[in-house]
Image (cartoon, rainbow, N blue to C red; front, side):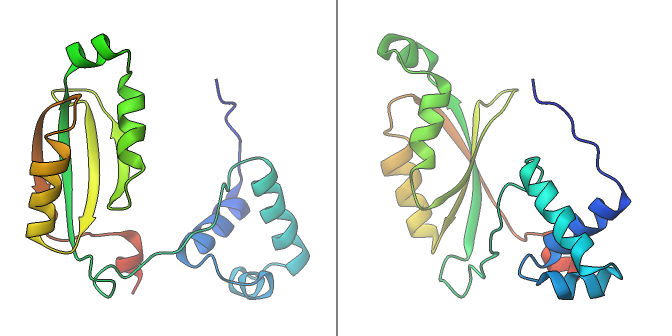
Length: 159
């Protein structure tokens, strides 16, 4: 079981600012939050050492990269196949995660077992992925696809 870490208002302000722009220098972050640079530096290092901040990343403009079609694909797992082949649901999910066109893989409860977030360049590419790659994958019993019309992410609301 993971120990919960208590963070205070200052830590929360630092985390919020980093979520908005993780590229800010300690100096710019300190100026923005009206805190001493040494305090910001110490707090960030502490958050990293305690595992609260795991990594820093980038947000891509997928339209500029030609990957402007995004969909969620809900998968019903064929448990009889998994059992006979000695595979687990987690191993099947990890197999999907290796693909470049799959952004996220989540194991879920309910009528479906796995949700994939897929980003491709066209309906044709999505169709190819679903009909040729995914549905022919042993361990997949059925799929349901939800095309994303708009992503209302936190970074879009800030701009």
